[in-house]
Image (cartoon, rainbow, N blue to C red; front, side):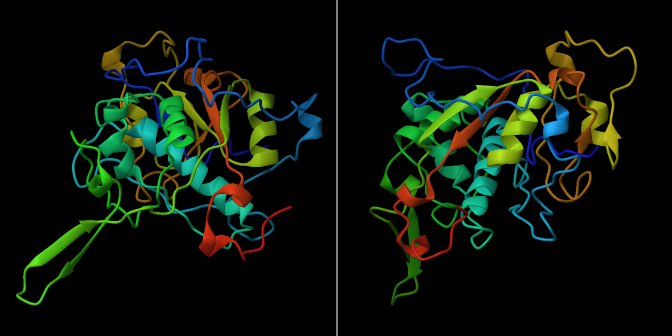
Length: 292
């Protein structure tokens, strides 16, 4: 049975740190936007299709472009890439494949830490990215190119800017006020094989953290990945690394992994975000046909 769990994934890694954020006294589950519940769990695998791939739904792809977190330099932002990539696809699903929207990775690196969410290129949590989108929203990538570095400054210019030459040949850059922003309405957590498959099938890709070995990062080419025998699920920080590598890696940027046994803790820690296309404030998208 082929069933792609999450089209974009990220690894937990040794310098992942959770920073305190400004929030209400109620514990998260913990953050303001963390109120969503997964879809109703299928009672068994028999209630789900034998094969499901959002990159090929009756010959139509709802996948957006693969990303590489490590260009033009190394940046520990796998938590950001995995989370936003799943949301990119969910947006495309809502617009019936008619729009490819890539959310602004660099904007989060510029502003997330300044707003108490994540630690930029030095790690973070998926739900911090979702909380940022719940509170502040993100523009698409046309506002800021990805440069793989954290910024100490969050202001209008580091959120969205444009540059043009002026008459004397010099370059003038200025902040774009009131850019189009995409918000998460709510988000939630889930785990377990059938619950993960149910959510993906009904609403779209999810993002999952798992223990990644150097063998996986450097040697995976294709096929269903299984770590070598004797793998220890209490891996230390020395065993962990990043994996959002781009289309040159694996199966055009994707991979498959054995499921149903929580391999490398793959089925332990997943998140999903809900975005309502009717309430995104997208004037340019308002006329597009949406999936009912």
